[in-house]
Length: 249
Length: 192
Image (cartoon, each protein chain N blue to C red):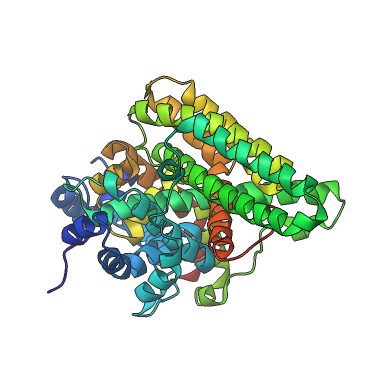
């Protein structure tokens, strides 16, 4: 008599496989396999008894309360402000920021109020621009991270978007560094090589290429860093809207 | 009348946040259980639930209406849990390295061996062993095992959730059970 394999016993325990009646019959007839199966049951029953902290009936409502402020809002984007797109839009933002920065620095004391206003405008523009940039970068990264494993992926549109984002990213990174915001500059610095890799890659990625890219994004924690800074930027953008803020992000 | 998942998804896609709220409230507890089984920490599981819904919201336009929304959420939650486990492993490695560099007590850089209060119900040694074996499983084995054993998902659905062939999912479950059995059987036999 051929005894049951461990795999057959496992599948039987979980009610999987086609041979359950045959396995049942064998177990009824074979003491050795019955003992083996009993051992398996004991182990899996112990594993099964590990407790999970219970969450109350209102847990879903609690999750919603925490989640709601983080959900992406319909925001006014840079594309709606400027008719130009991509690197040209970013260049325009960067030029305005540098101009505002220089105006603030060199205006005579009598015009300090004007300089302060320039500072507010500068901060507001940069916050909106960088927030918008990070949102769009996140969307590209998420497409890749959430791709179905083991399948090739058409990334033609992501590649095109990444090409636009690379040029913008460079300008915002330089601007953030110039205005002294090392945290944002550092995240944009991490983001740039990944955007470059996507922008310079093929339109269709093999499953291995998708996996490599996913591991790189996740391994370096880029998505997480981008999300954290993006959230901070949006928060500060909201605070900066009605009043003046600091000069950094 | 209660909204079905598919109707709620369609409305949420159209910008109805109340419809998305229905989905959040309906699936949160189930996702928490999965995330807890995957991560072993309630706080991490909370983060996974939050992150899962955030990713789902951003990716709603990609959801295939023919699929089950719950299965789709599970796949996202499993991926979020795996992300978190990988990040935790990296952090522990870095902390261990930093501790070595600073010549501080290396014991402090190890993961806290103390079980969370709500896990003390299971006898200490067996529980630690279960946790150790689960932590030692490959990501695929752990995910497949959790989905099969704790969540009762059939092998075919696990394959779909993980984006692998059913055979690969089956073997992952099988390997996980083998490892658990080898580690726990001596303890369980002694106790019985």
